[in-house]
Image 1 (cartoon, rainbow, N blue to C red):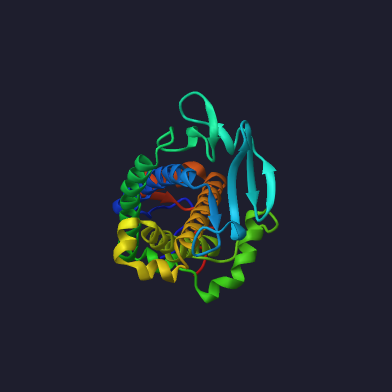
Image 2 (cartoon, one colour):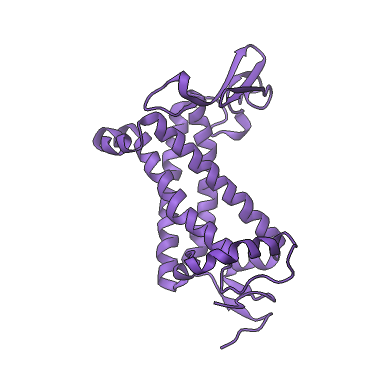
Amino acid sequence: MERLPGTKVYRYAVLTRVSHWFWVIAFAALVSSGLQIFNAAPYLDASDKSNPARRVLSIDSPADGVGTTTIFGRTFTTTGWLGWTDDGMGGRTARAFPGWITIPAYQDLADGRRWHLFFAWIAASCWLAWLVSSAIKGNLREMVLRPSDLPKLWPMQAYYLRLRKEPPAHGTYNPLQKLAYTVVAFVLAPMIVLTGLALSPGIDAIAQPLTWLLGGRQFARLWHFVAMLGLLGFFVVHTFQVATQGLLNQMRSMITGWYRLGDHDGVGP
């Protein structure tokens, strides 16, 4: 049966919505506590162990009051932002990320790990709950990118950029949404879980082959950081799309489950 624009449809199940909002909270806490952990060793090496010769990123304070960030050998002064920043107790000190963005605000590696582990379990549970709920409801099949969607990626991007008046024909989710969900659910999420396990001293002791397969602890740190940046990129793009494609409608659907179809929603297979 054809669904006309303006029709309300029940798009998101309760488990999907609950897991979505808990994941948002957990992800924010994971990033914040992860930066706290990073502060204890503020560098990333493309190596099986710490190796300055293969350093990809480092955030330092070579002199009191001067913060620097080095990326692939290029050094930038980042005083006040990175390297020499807020210490979380009203002062400033040599510290990679400032206290206002880390959990806890003051430097404490042990507490940072506790926060990180706690919210890691919540985030992983939300991811699994979302997969199960989407699979049961039948949405997962619609969210996975298929070969037939590939030719529609650029036309859909052109529509978002206002270079095209009409989007390509699509179902519940457009091809760019499918690409994002596929990469997040089946690439970035598993990657961040596996690298996180490899970085856990307890897991590493009983599953050392996992660390070895990832190239060692330093490579695992690098992949973990890259996956985090990928998820942050998804969050920014996702937020932008929600804000520009009917903010109230999108937010209402993720709170109540009910979504009002727009002019181009569900216009094709």
